[in-house]
Length: 103
Image (cartoon, rainbow, N blue to C red; front, side):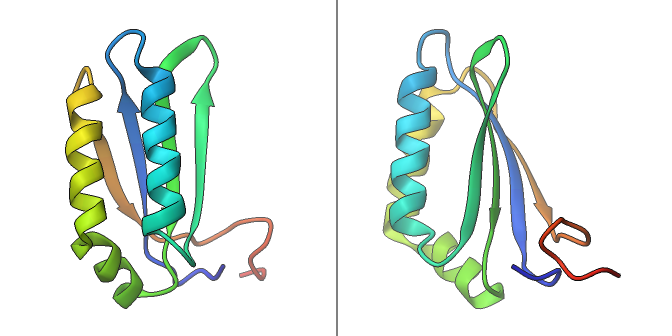
């Protein structure tokens, strides 16, 4: 991973009791649609229906391919149906991390 990789930070909150389903769909989708990318799903202590995702792409072309895939659209619809509130999605680019060269 480099400090030039585009990515997203995403927060999703499932309807009560649907956290496991949300995590499964999000994980299955990333394993298929974001091949070659870097992603981490994080749980929130004492919030079983909340999921934070940090995902990064090799470059803008890979990000565009992911955004335009049919699978991304299908899974997005399924995931949106599970949510208790609109997802928070912020475009980001890393500038510092334990695995990145020092600035």
